Length: 285
Image 1 (cartoon, rainbow, N blue to C red):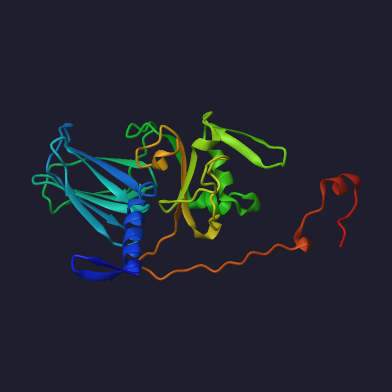
Image 2: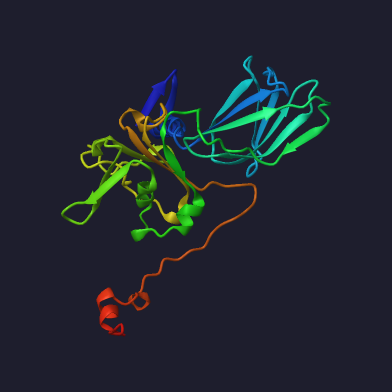
């Protein structure tokens, strides 16, 4: 089928691709993070119009901006990863923060204090201290990073189980032995899940909750998962959830890299049963 637009004929498939790309780009919110920068001088006074340069270490993609009249600026919609921040202003030495870590659906605050000097001089800050109290967001939740995903034991390779490590979860088993639970007392129908910003709900009607993704992501493909269990941000939940679980898949970098893995499950590798061990009976061959 062909559709005529402005005197030209476009295949319907082409329009479908455009719609998909628009939805895909819109859906990236929720799997990206924010860096909130505040710049001050040694006396504590704000520094407006300070030049900011934020560079992703894995891809060298750079974003530039300037602080506003309050001496602050927020870089939004950032892919997860590690960044480097350069801050400069006339009359001050350039300050470079080597390690700024961005997590999905999280705000990373960076407070920079400029020292009087030449912009040709550089002051290096190896890392930014994480504040004990996050005042940049009122959402409740946690980030489960790659190390936890790779190291923690996961029964049945179900990443959803790691979401139960966050505060506010209370669960039990149903009559079939399946794990069911809620966060902060919210009903099951208020749970949501997305993968790379795309809704991945297992049930369209949301009758039994949506934390379990319809297509379960492989452990090897996930770089990070974040959980917002209450007071979620405006870019979370798609207007249908008060608890949101977001998966972020691995992305490419400047260097060629890859992984090789195999799943092996053989009864010969199983441990002996508890009853046999208690009775001193060796495991059957």
